[in-house]
Image (tube, rainbow, N blue to C red):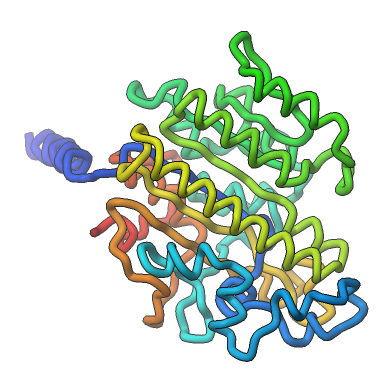
Length: 359
């Protein structure tokens, strides 16, 4: 009897939490392999002055300023105007506000697995790993009656078919150089399909540039109004691996523009306005100095990540400058809680980030 009472109290608590929350929709965005250093301090002085990594003559005119605060704002103006004023930013290690991954590998597939399953599974140890055996939070949400068929994924990297286990999860995923499909695609979607075939595959056949992925995701938002959208950008990591720091900075600036445009659209559409939370984060860090091109366990700092949030249930803390420690495995439960769901699996998981959930 006591166990039944506790169970019903838990259910009642979840119902009250859902009733109090204003977030009805959720958009999650990732910038693959984007360092906390650029987000919080702007262009790296050592790298922007290294001709081995810079070809553009005007890169310093675009992104170099005297102070870290000026540099970060010119690089990521949406983050440092709108999110800094109305949202939350975690991960500035210069003030002791830390966020790290818990998985031991420090590269993409293990990072996204940890992020979306809440479990840093050591068997997920390669970017070529087969379809993920772990249930992810989007899959869980998509199986809830209020959200069934109202979750979507758009990604630059085609590994997401495996990371989110498309066949098992049933999630609609558009990743890599995949066209829009379906009986009711719009003329704009048909045009984006047509245009995509002429865009150079500068990262190879597995990774689609963000300037193609973003318009496809935005058009889907406008036409289908999913309640949960995951949008995964790839340009920052791709140019990082190529050692092109100027293009890495351009990619960060361009992605900031896309995210700003996305937020402005969400606030202009009555379906999303004032009832949508946006989370932005990354899968892993990168090395320092000449090692900035790579990321793996043997390179220091590749486990260092960050997180941003803005929405009706998140207090406007701005840049969180208090010392503290967050982990990537806390994101999955946070995603669920934001829309009033308790995401659980058979595996141990990180706890939700309460400061994001309380206005």
